[in-house]
Every structure is written in structure tokens, then in C-alpha cells.
Length: 336
Ligand code: 5GP
Ligand code: MN
Image 1 (cartoon, rainbow, N blue to C red):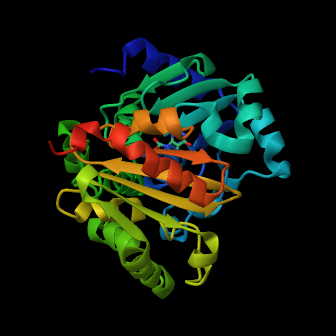
Image 2 (cartoon, rainbow, N blue to C red):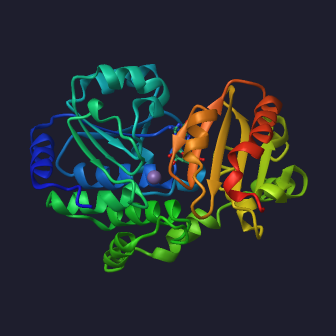
């Protein structure tokens, strides 16, 4: 599917050219793809434009090495003006204004031109002047690569590093189903750049604290519940438990994937107390869709095989609700 139509690229180019103040935004709890796409664009535009990356909340330590990361602004009262003054806003790696949390109202009220580049289904198109949306893309970084090229912008080593980071993290090192021909095309073109690809992997996957590593051991031994009859498993975690392991934001990244390494587990969930609510993460293998479950029962959404949501109920209630749903929602996974 060709999403980079000439007229939309021309519109984007002239929006960039005429903009005086560009603000790049990405979703709450930014991951490698949100940061990668934001910083790839930032590193490209900052040479010629007044440009800032503004995110709703903190960056996990794992990604603090990324080029340009030190210059990222985190939302607070003092950054309100920056969003209000912007005349061009990029919406990267999210499809709906609700995904930027406290920045939502300002974003919706802003008179700035808005360009969305994203790979989540059902984009909120009415929010934006230009939408580049392709749910078949493995990562927003995949789309960012084509966007920069089509706009005739030169991709620097730094920008290439950021794009590669998003590809690696959203595809689980090119292992998930979402990894497609275009993902490998971008990766292969990035291989012509001089940045150290193994260093990127090393930064992301070999940078755990001792606490994080032990927390993983704890959740696997003590907190993982498996339902072989539903080919499902879940892990739940309270903040008090996490804090025993010197918890830092980002430490539980990837925990939701762990049960999928068990043979015959096709659906996994992770529930955690965080920021005064319960964050829910869902993953699946094959054609079992988790975004519909997230949408219908957990106030969220996402991709077919990776989705999330939230609840304001206590953790044990959320877990109970999930377990009670299993006989109904896992019909496709139940062995006859
Ligand atoms: P994660 O489990 O890594 O937090 O989220 C996985 C995917 O689920 C994200 O890439 C995003 O597409 C989606 N997602 C996570 N949380 C929410 C949410 O609260 N609302 C919606 N609509 N999607 C979410
Ligand atoms: Mn993404």
C-alpha cells in the first residue's frame, strides 16, 4: 500500500518549509519506536529549523544513549507555551490524541498544522492536516525512513541510528510477524550507514540493572500464571513488589512477552500498578487478535498481536476480570 502520495508529500514539504516552530510529539511511556521516529526527524530537521521533541512523560534509561535524547523536553506546566506556539506539530507512533495524556487538550486545541506518521489501526484523521498511516508497517521508524527520503531530506548517521532502534524494538529484533519486506528493505538500506548496529542492540538489550534482572526472575518464578486449557498466561505486579528490586521506569518492558516463550502459550498479558492506575499489556502469536480484547474490555487498543489498555480498578479486580473473560475470549485457542 502506497501511503506517501505525491500531493501529501508536497503538502508536508511546504508545511516544514514555512514552519517557524516545529514540535515533535510521541506517545506516553515512549518506547524505542516512539523515540526512534521522533529523534530521527529531530536530528534531520534541527539543522535548518527551530524544532523540539516534547513527550508526555519520562524516557526509560535504556534509550538515554540515543542521539539527541538529552535535548528532549518532558511535558510540564512550563512546556505549555511550547505547544501553544508551535505552527507545525508531528504526531509520531500514535493514532489518537488520548495517547499523549496531559498534552491531549492542548494538542486538540492547537491551531498548528499537524502531520501524523503512524502504524496503529484507526487513526484519528480529523485531528491532522496530513496523515501517513500504515498498520502493515512494523514500526513508525519504517515509515519515517520513507518519509524523510520522499521529502528529499538527508538522513544522517544519527538519524539512521534512531530509525534502526525503532525497527529493532518494534519487531523484537526482526522476529515478530509484523516484520515485512519493507522492514528488511529499510534495514538493508540502513546497513550502508556507518553506525555500529551491534552497539545499538547492546545498548538496548545488555543494559539491565541487577535489580531489573532479578525482578524478571521473580515474576517468572512467583507471578506467572499459566492456563494451558486457554493457551494463555499472565503476570501481575504491584509497585511494592517492583520497588523491592529498585524498580525504574522501563524495567518491566518486555515482561509481557516472556510467557510467549512457553510452547503452546499463544496469548499473554501483563498487569502492573503504575502512575495511579493499572497498565495492561497484551501480546499474542499467530492470528489471535488482542487489540479487540484491549479495546472492548480494558479501555485501550493497539495492533493485532500487541495491544494495551488501562483500568482504575484495584489490581486484583483487574486480574480477576481478565481471568473471568478467558473462557469467552479465548475460544479460538481452546483445544477441542
Ligand atoms: P504496550 O503493551 O507496549 O504498552 O503497548 C503495546 C501497544 O498497545 C502499543 O504499541 C499501542 O499500540 C497499544 N496501546 C498500549 N496502551 C494503549 C492504550 O491505553 N490505548 C490504546 N488505544 N492503545 C494502547
Ligand atoms: Mn511503534
